[in-house]
Length: 88
Image (cartoon, rainbow, N blue to C red; front, side):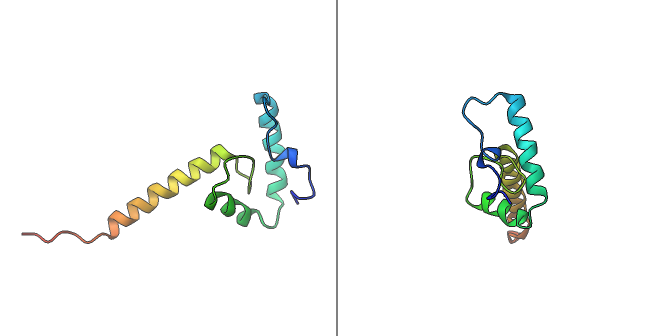
């Protein structure tokens, strides 16, 4: 779907005013919401990571939050799975 739509909807022009950016991002997210590959697109942007634009319904800032939470959760799981030191 986004390939058929204007790329400018998904990527900010330079010096875009905040109100215009928010409106553009919301419009891009509406396109993403009806896309059959939204989840795959989002995962691509999280794994690469893509530093700009709306991918899979998330802005770059929202993707940073998701990545931070994933890393924190992975670290917690690794600590929980680590063997306990033997009592001596």
